[in-house]
Amino acid sequence: MTKQMTPILAIVVPCYNESEVFPLCLRELSAVMAGMVGNGLIAGNSYLLFVDDGSKDDSWAQIEAACRGNGHVQGLKLSRNKGHQLALLAGLAAADADIIVSIDADLQDDISVIPDMVKAYLAGSDIVYGVRGSRDADSGFKRVTAEGFYKVMGLMGVQQVFNHADFRLLSRRACAALLSYREQNIYLRGLVPLIGFTSSCVYYDRAERAAGESKYPLKKMIALALEGITSLTVTPLRIIATLGLSISALSMVATVYSIVMKYTGKTVEGWTSVMIAIFFMGGVQMLSLGIIGEYVGKIYMETKGRPKFFVEKHVGSLRDAS
Ligand code: UDP
Ligand code: MG
Image (cartoon, rainbow, N blue to C red; front, side, top):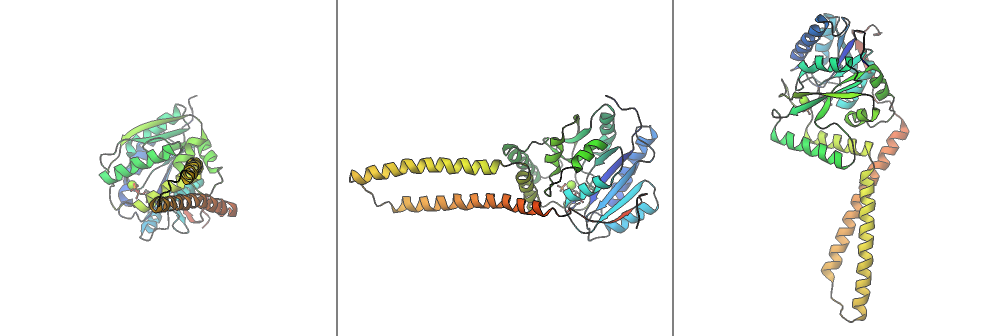
């Protein structure tokens, strides 16, 4: 079903210490939006929503200044740094538009495909994924680790669109569906495909960061992968259960073998094999306990039902009370 009305678009941009790239980001996104308003693709009251994720530099001051001079810019300031995923979620919760595009501040994603995303929405998609056709601009290390990330996630049973990060369009109802998930552990790339609704992809080449440094060092990437796996699938628990079963079966064979050896009088000293068995079993048990512990910890955090973020200020919006 195609949509008739000209939609209001909100572009949500999470920013953490992005003062270096902010002026360029503001300029480029404003230009793309003005172009779409100009050719009647989106409504004139569409806007950019910058979410300051507790930056330590002057990102927020820049965002506020941009809001003052421009009715098409809004700023949302979180009470402290909560990470990319929650900053995005806060932006999605605050945006009251017909369609919402989320994009990183560093302009690595090709903003010139945003009109294609809007067209895909108008043609009937509720979710439009931005997919990286090539990652040539990323460093070899980033490419290898990122590809490994998608592979491991896939093996663990987390369904996600390959080479899609958090550059996507959501319709109002897809956004409402996403926000109705009550879990604490948010991994948007894994959650969005669970919603269903009609979806499509637009392809682009990923560029280098326009300015500033990556806010996703390896440590944060590993944390994100673990978050994604343990919040979306119990496959690791199944793997350790299967491993436990296989080792038990093997040990039964070994027991029979030892008894036979004892009574046939051919007992060996066996120190090495006993030590290996102890180390191996010890290692497997510690790992298994660690994985189970990870899930138990998740259950503990979920039962608290803590608020995921606090908004300190929302400027440039009609809903702005402060
Ligand atoms: N970001 C955020 N909070 C954080 C870390 C990052 O809001 O704690 C934002 C950051 O400003 C950027 C986006 O998340 O807009 C993606 O980060 P980055 O580009 O550094 O990640 P990379 O592309 O290197 O994976
Ligand atoms: Mg980036």
